[in-house]
Image (tube, rainbow, N blue to C red; front, top):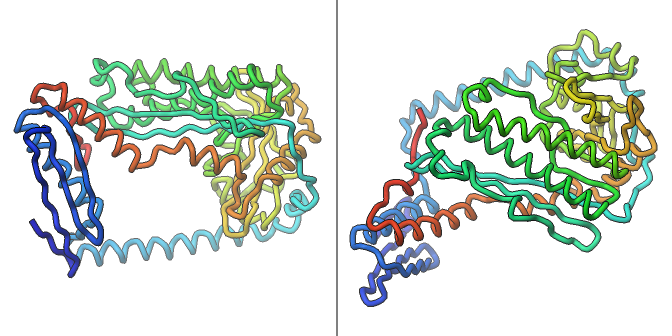
Length: 421
């Protein structure tokens, strides 16, 4: 079989070896792919497996745009108009900020003035997750990983990775994609916090660096629709409280590095959080439009600066365990600002230990890369990442195991294509 698309040729064929109960699928497009599978399956399952692999491999190599050309033109025009309106909106924000920029600039600091800091030991943590949409239901996979410096010791346990829902008989309880995503997010973050708590107790690092916020996300209406989700939120919230408590008890400096800043701390619009801004800053920000922190801070900070010099103090209304000092930083001119959540030993009662805040900034500065992200964050993100390719390969293994043991059945393991509604 030969397929052609825009003068490019693809050759696709397969051969079956009846003695070894295997098939070979080959595709040539400047190079040859060999896929060898050894299974004892029925002829029907073998043919189905071949067809599934043909479709999957072709989809990786090209995708033809078949959308009606006038509809494409209309969609493109709509997005270009939206970009124009975004520019106008940002210009309006800048006009309103211009009147306070000179005074508010006095409240920011520069990394040049921060001495780099090298701790005796530190641990960095991250989690990753992905979903599979099967005919049997929606499932998710998560993993959490720690790297202990120096020495680059990788730490995880059997409890650090898993499938949601773990019991296949409960697939029917996660019948909505929104519920699965929420359940998976909460479980992944809980596993990161639990792993961090364990590492603090066992290894006593001087600093714990987490890729993400140290503040819990608020409840949503989804918890009321799922008993699984309600219980998982309680476990998630408890894991964050315990990590804060354990970090303070063991005199560990806790740092959360937030890459995607969608908070509204500067506007005081935070559910279940009590935000204390420096009085001068609070006065200057009065009357500003309702904006995310990142949009306000991006108009204030230049390269190598942080804001505010005196951090924002954040407490949770439901527990005394969660107390955080937050600062925004901008390592590079061409990146959006990041947020540092600083906790653990740096916060005692209502006081922020500024010497430890400076130490946290010095630690981040010491490991900052040309990409604008600290090296430990990049490293742990790289090693825990559940890429699409990895998930495809794991799914292939899972599918072959299912076909081998399923006695001709195939429905449950098939993937779902298209819209969810």
